[in-house]
Length: 114
Image 1 (cartoon, helix red, strand yellow):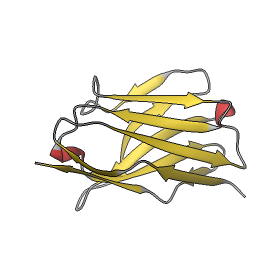
Image 2: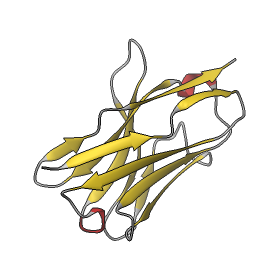
Image 3: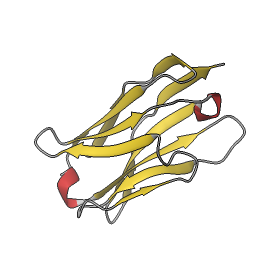
Image 4: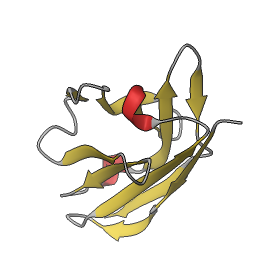
């Protein structure tokens, strides 16, 4: 019933920007903490950014100042604006909804070329 669909990934050069979108259904993003995670080859999945229902934002140290998480409640969509991208940002990015149960999207690939 709950579905999270990521989009916006792709190939970008170092220093470029991308905006990821997470369209939610079966859940209201305004009532839940939402997050973006990523997993690079050979590495564990890590939290990139999170926004609570109250609007509090948390970022991984590696992306602070470069990434911004936001939401559009009317569209029930969460965004991740990624600027000044680096090759180490290359990963599959996943949308997460933290309710009593964690829900995950299918992931979208972000590749940053050197």
